[in-house]
Image (cartoon, rainbow over all chains, first blue to last red; front, side, top):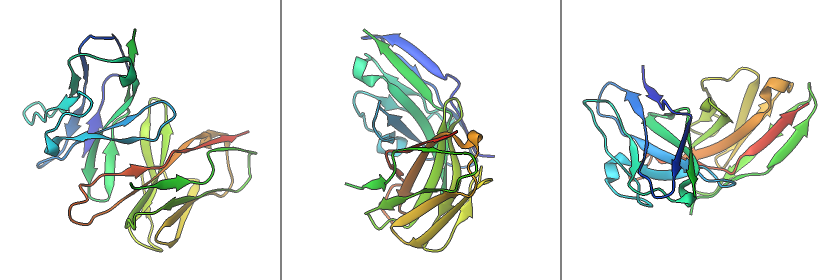
Length: 107
Length: 115
């Protein structure tokens, strides 16, 4: 069965520290994976997708098929990165979302 | 920019009331979705629609129904609201056209409190 797991509900780091939000997936085939972000009082929106291989707001995510992971990373966290982050796996009409990780970046 | 608009941002309803949540998108997307967002549970799909008048159950359809009479509008209906339906409801849309990238576009959400 297709599944997305985000093991951390809450992640708290200091400003300037590296941050890694974990995402593991279960999928038979070549997956397409996304990260969505929801800042306070804003709508949920796409942050990045693995197929684009781009860095958005300093975040990157590499698909590791061997470990079935798609962790989101940023070398130096900023206070404005505080938000709710969801890893997502599109599958036909239905996209499967992880439970989400709330990131707090402390000053 | 794609715009998904949920007409009601905050609602308070009594147990047993019928509740309508309305959603409109302006990008001619074929697919529309209703999700519940609850802390620790992530986003759970209630219903989705891939065409006018078509609807499919998601993961948690019990206690809900939907209506899609026009392509741009997708309504979520709680026939008899209960306190366990207190939640944030997110409407979303997407396109399956080539080049759309499987991206889902979300509305701002409707906070529903059932008392």
